[in-house]
Each structure stands twice: as C-alpha cells, then as structure tokens.
Image 1 (spheres, one colour):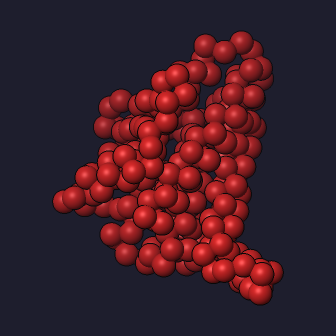
Image 2 (cartoon, one colour):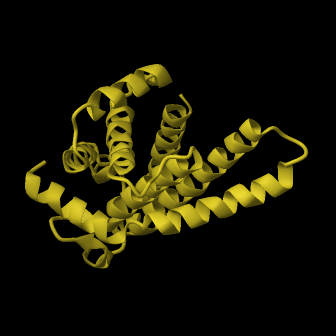
Length: 215
C-alpha cells in the first residue's frame, strides 16, 4: 500500500478521533458507575476488570455496526460513492480504526496512563497496528499469546516516535484491511462480514491491549 493512502488515513483519523479530554470523561463516568455499583461487593481489581470488559464490548459493537451498515454498498448501487473517502479508502474502515484507537485510549486512561502525552498516544496507535497485524496472521485458529504480543509491542516502541508509530500502524492496517475478503463475497454477504469481522477484530485488539496495560 503506497504512502499516499497511509497519509490519507492518518490525516482523516486525526480529524475524527475523540479528544483525550472526551475519552477521559467517558471513561471516568464508567469508573464511577461501576465503583458505585460494586464498591462493597468486589475488590478494586475485580471492578477494574469489569470496566475494561465493558469498554471493549462497547467499542466492539461500535465497530461492528459501522461495518454492517456501510457494507450495504456491496449490493445497493450508488451508496459506495457516498461512503468512500479520498484515495479509495472506505469510510467504514476509517471509522473502525477511529473507534479502535479510542478504545485503547480509554483502556490506557483506566490503567492510569496519561493519554494527553505523546508517549501514551504512541502506545495506543502501535497497539492498533500490531493488533491488526497479528490478527491477520492467524492461521488455523492459532492466536498469538499475550506474552508474545506484549514483547512485540515493547520491541517496536523502542526508539519510535509518535509519527513513525502512526505510520507503522497505518501501513499495517491498510495492508490487512478486510476489503479483500468482502470483494470475494456474494452480494449482500459483505454486510454480514462487515459486522462480524469488525466485531471480532476489535474484541481481539481490546483483549490484547488489556493484557498489555495489566502486565
């Protein structure tokens, strides 16, 4: 995938990803809600796990419905033009990446990382990129282990700047986009694939990121 498309993805994402302040407010609301509900029943660690699970679940459904709705372009003439951004990159793909980045930002804040800093945002983007890569490389149901995933992320973080990390994430994400799968599907099936693939990929990413932050 050429650098032009990578740059388009980055510029588009930077314009639509929610601000750290917004993510922090939403996450704090969840923390308060779950703390009030389980304060005298569960330990803080148990509550934290429940909050992380809720964050991952919420964003996996955001991504799922994004894929399901915009994939209607596979069988309704004319819709494709309306939901395609410059460079031939689909809007559902951009939105899915947006939600995945925001999910990682929310998890990072939950585990007391400062998402206002370049260092934490570098981790967020890299987690999305490596998550896409390792998910795409699965064969026969063999999933990379959490420890191996964490080692891989830490190795790539060494010496990387936020911009270079975004570049890695963008190229990796573009290379393994689900469009190749959808193009080979019968009419109408793309909508189902969009929902299930986006949801599965986001759940995978969320669980891996959660393991990283808890390590």
